[in-house]
Figure 1 (cartoon, protein in one colour):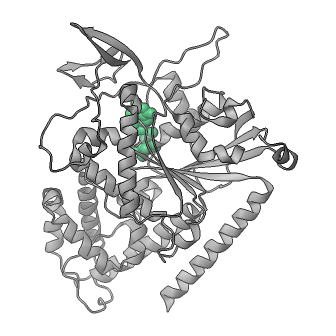
Figure 2 (cartoon, protein in one colour):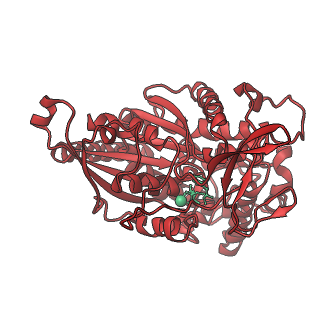
Figure 3 (cartoon, protein in one colour):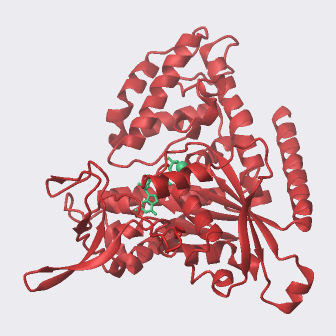
Amino acid sequence: MASSLTTFTDEARIALDTLSGRAAGLFSPSLRLGVTGLSRAGKTVFISALVHNLIHGGRLPLFEAQKSGRIARAFLEEQPDDAVPRFQYEDHVAALVDDRAWPDSTRAISELRLTIEYESASGWNRLFSAGKLSVDIVDYPGEWLLDLPLLGKSFADFSREAVELAALPVRCDLSQGWLALAAKIDPDADADEMMARRLAERFAAYLKACKLDERALSTLPPGRFLMPGDLEGSPALTFAPLMKLSERRPRSGSLQAMMERRYEAYKTHVVKPFFREHITRLDRQIVLIDAMQALNAGPAAMADLERAVTEILSCFRPGRGNFVSDLFSRRIDRILVAATKADQLHHESHDRLQAIVRRLADRAVARANFSGADVDVAAMAAVRSTREGTVKQGRETLPVIIGTPLKGERINGETFDGKAETAIFPGDLPEKADAVFDVSGPENTEPAIRFVRFRPPKLERTAEGVTLSLPHIRLDRALQFLIGDHLA
Ligand SMILES: Nc1nc2c(ncn2[C@@H]2O[C@H](COP(=O)(O)OP(=O)(O)OP(=O)(O)O)[C@@H](O)[C@H]2O)c(=O)[nH]1
Ligand SMILES: [Mg+2]
């Protein structure tokens, strides 16, 4: 009874929030754009580049409103949500443009409001609309989305699944430390804070080890164990799955009772509010993926990436009867799945990369049984760190990419100092997208592409000393899909 009451209140609250959000939208049109992806996928760089290009009138030929000269002005405004950290746009751009360094990892949610003043394309619209659109951009870790399935699971389900997954051959070497400790614990013993902490620490260390592992294992919940945000060390994060749980109600004062309570607190105080306050209010969503890294690691990593995208898309799937999906999935009508580091390849391979992302997204859409929103894909670079050229090798002319590799990057035994420019032949992606998913293929073959991380580009200045906008690849196409129709 108690739990159905909570659910009811939550739903009522979400409905109210949604309604008031829409009512507010009538007066000043706004669009909430979610930007997500697993850590290091490129969220911060994407948002910085998008805003920089709009504010500085960058080259965006595929973004119709800009191309036809209908954008009068784009500028930053105060964000509507006081309780959410602001996306530190100025710091990130200073790193990119002044220091030619990639911005620091961000690890929590943040928000920025970009307002665009434009002239509508149709005379009719010009008559009725003010020609002003506020885009609220929300950057949040993909890891947090993967917590949604927990809402439907009891502590016993969660524990059983976690132990099963930890025992899988690919994971057991990483989970050993935690499993050994958990096996020694009697769930009926008296609750002990230090023991709870040790268990939680070992469990979190195992999850982090999976994330760092070069087999690129997919992420397991709870997402905040990897990305705690500001919750580090709080009781709602000091729990772990237990083994040998009794079927009966746990004795009050026992370790099991304590862990169960904290698990429920995690769902109530962390997962639900996150979905209610952020995810249910989104209109559009971009899911960034690091396809280059997965391609480099081989088919098993591609399969893993596909699993992660499937899980992420499942969170936006309508009509599953879970407590939020019915309400918000109706609102997100466009989702873009984008690989954002295409500048590490020669342009001849960009369409192939896009075909690979399309294949991955199609499979994820099918597996997640997803419908209800347009899902498109893109191979792009939010910030283009390379130029293209050719190099003569004997009689052959090879297409190369030229850039400044980051300090410490290595290729063919050469280590770079972060200052010298170099030309690299990155190799080609396979013509058939299926090849990169084929786990039955020969193992341990050299990756098809050689990939080196470059420093952000040096920006040109005009004769008047004005810095030009950040170069990109197909960022304009992404923009057109995500917000173009709202500027029609
Ligand atoms: N070449 C290239 N590299 C990129 C691009 N975008 C991101 N990167 C690389 O990917 C790294 C991670 O990018 P971020 O934007 O910080 O990724 P994030 O998703 O915000 O990561 P977290 O904040 O840790 O979750 C950067 O440090 C760059 O090395 C791009 O457009 N081109
Ligand atoms: Mg970030």
